[in-house]
Image 1 (cartoon, rainbow, N blue to C red):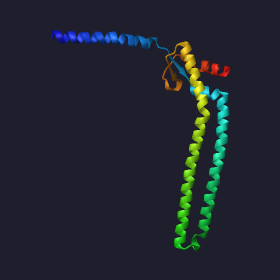
Image 2 (tube, rainbow, N blue to C red; image 1 turned 30 degrees about the vertical axis):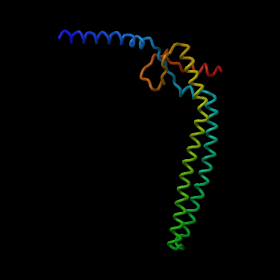
Image 3 (cartoon, one colour; image 1 turned 45 degrees about the vertical axis):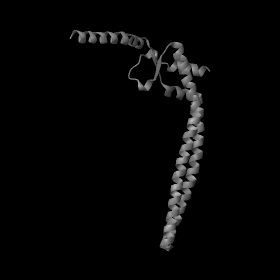
Image 4 (cartoon, rainbow, N blue to C red; image 1 turned 135 degrees about the vertical axis):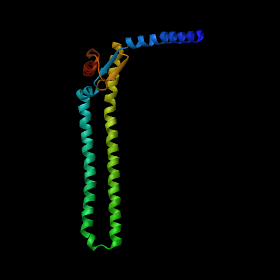
Length: 172
């Protein structure tokens, strides 16, 4: 029994000695927050990127609309001729229209992919710039962790780095 008691005491003491520095490290860590959405919204580069994306979206939508109109015209033409078509010809036309419809769906998916790729391409340098600025400020001011403001339940207002990041980005 005495050996078991000594083992328990030894384990507890080890836990206290090992855990104490860990808890002390947590107490001395500075945690900051940023509102990256607000930062991105107020950058001039974001407005320029959004106008580029709108132009790209308009071009892609124009292409999709043209192909959609072409399909609608083909369907309307088919409906006019249905009564005069023989069953075999009707089946063939329906297959052709189905293939055109599937091609349109595939084209739309491809265009969505093109748009998403363009979006990543346009916003990647802006995000990198924001992250680099956040890292710079965090290191300079001794923050060991920086979280997204919207993902936190509570934070002390003095730990909000959003305006410091904006000031630094706007001064470049």
